[in-house]
Every structure is written in structure tokens, then in C-alpha cells.
Image (cartoon, rainbow, N blue to C red):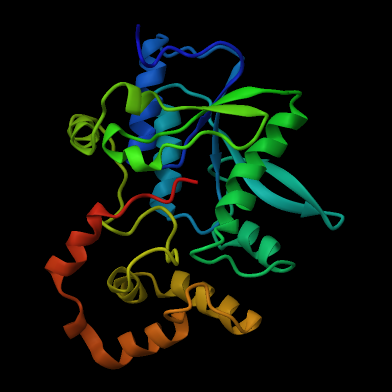
Length: 267
């Protein structure tokens, strides 16, 4: 049996905007002659903190594979949680969805990843329920070399489906695939889709202060406004100040490149 054959019933393909997730989407499309049935929804959630290259990559996947990808964003309308349906052109690029969430909530942290739950998981759920879906299969791009991340669904509305794990896909499989394609995700190793994510190593965040200071200033702004930190071990403003005072000597290319093994924040 083809491990990428859609299970019965409604199927959600959660597309994180990363290479592994993109490979999974391609394989599912190929297994169905690049024509997915109406009972299948491919969704990408944009928090407004995604790297611009991630947004371009999602657009390129849709264009190259003739696949409809629904762009969703957390929103608030009349002081109530809502979902904004958009596209590449109209996607938020300055943290607007994240801003709307943080305005009335605590900062997420390493123990409470509310950003993933509220801005991604629950945003997709609200969208599908509004479309009339009552139950569905949730397709997640976890590879066979990431067994520790396999978890059963805690929500009664969906069951998790892991086609990459079932197909024996590894990181090497994904790398080899993208080396043969006409387009790829244009992000430096270790940077990840969410620019400045508090789950990244201090070395990676320090490098980002040099490469993407406007993105990093956003995280520092919210820490100052809330009087708290995303990560108790470090503050964004303090790290940025350290980077500005120390100059380029703290950036060791080998150390920076080794961060390419960090996992994606897929949500």
C-alpha cells in the first residue's frame, strides 16, 4: 500500500513551510496525480514572524505543483478570536497576528508554547470547523528519524497521520529530494522558519541579531512591554546589546553552521 495514499474521510495537510513539510506535500500530491479531492485541505498558518523566504517557499510549492494552499492567520474581530484567510501577497510580515494574540495574553515560553497552539493548531481548527468539518485526519510531517516526536492526538476531532514516518523517510531523503528540484527554501542553516524563535540556541539568536535585527527587536519590544522573558535564561535586549558591543568576533562560522541540525518549529 502506498504510504502517501490519503486515509478515509477528511484530511488536513498541515504545511509548516519547511523542507520536510514541503517534501511530504509533494509525495502526497504525486500519489494522487497532483489532484487532491475536495475532502483534503492543505493549510499554512502565518504568525507574521515567518521568514520572508518561508512565505516565498509556500508560494513556490503551490505554483510549481498546481496545489491550492490555504493561508490562515490568527485574528481578532470585535474583540473575539477569528481567522483571517489571506495569500502570499496579503500575508502579514511584521508580526501582526502574533501582536494581536500577545496584546491580551502572557508571553509563550519553552514550557508553554502557546504561540504554536493558538496561532497555528487552533487557528486551523477554527477554520475547518467553520467549513463544516466535524472530524478529520491531521497529516504531520514527522520523519522516521524523529520517532520521539510521534504523539497521538489529544483532540477528539482528529487523528494524527504520519506518512513520512510510515514511509521510512529520513533527513537525508529530504535533502536529496530538494537538491533535484528547480526551487528550494532560501533560508540559512539554523535560521528556521520563525525568525528569532525563543526555542533556538543562544548562538543562533546572536547570529540573527546581526543578520535580522528588525525581527529580533520585535521580540525585545514585547519582553519590555510585558516585563517578562520568553526564555528565563536570557533576554532579547540583553543579547542584542552583547552582540553590538562584541562585534563580529563572537560569530564562528563552524558553530553557526552546526545549528542546521536544529528541528523546525512546525507547530
